[in-house]
Image (tube, rainbow, N blue to C red; front, top):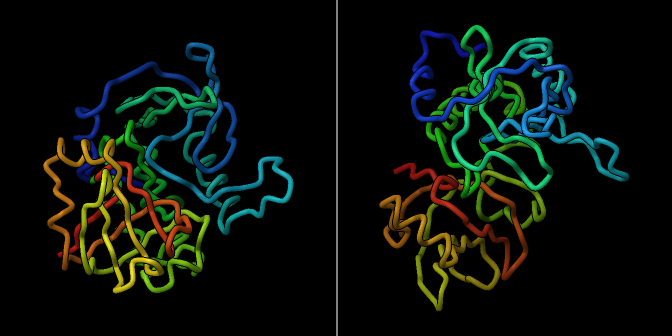
Length: 253
């Protein structure tokens, strides 16, 4: 289901900085395209703000995520051979020398929003690229709510804190109630179980705490709140996500 002009996505362009218009000449995967002409030497654009299911791309031993090829073909249907205009909301280049941009198709369609609404990607923001996250979350929610695309597969289910340790090393979306919040040293800890040594925990280091303060978001007030959080799960006294910016959290009540 495409994101139509009637939906409230047109306003996002006023929140971003417009860039050049290019043509998409190839598709790398479900969130990366090749363009012509190159911009400042870069020929690839990483669709900032989303993460499509990953495919091996020549990596030995890498197991493709479900729907990886489907997401790639969907993106090809949307933009291959089409003109797109780049819009920027933060850092414009990643460490792989790819451009980081939102794409507006020649007919006005917001490519990231469309991929999310089709259930072909999840929202995936960074501390240096946090623009229009609320709009992307709304598009993601519309697909998840009806089990569209990746959301019909257990691989992408919302996780509960009690099972987070089963998914170490993966990017996951976890939903649960914060049992306690504590500040210790330079970190803030959000605990989801009675034993912080084994239960699911969120950590916020001092650099990230500044972003929370600047956003008017006080994590110390989250005790007793049900939240949805996304990030890469690590193993440290149980499953842990290290939060780098406030947009990783959705407060549900």
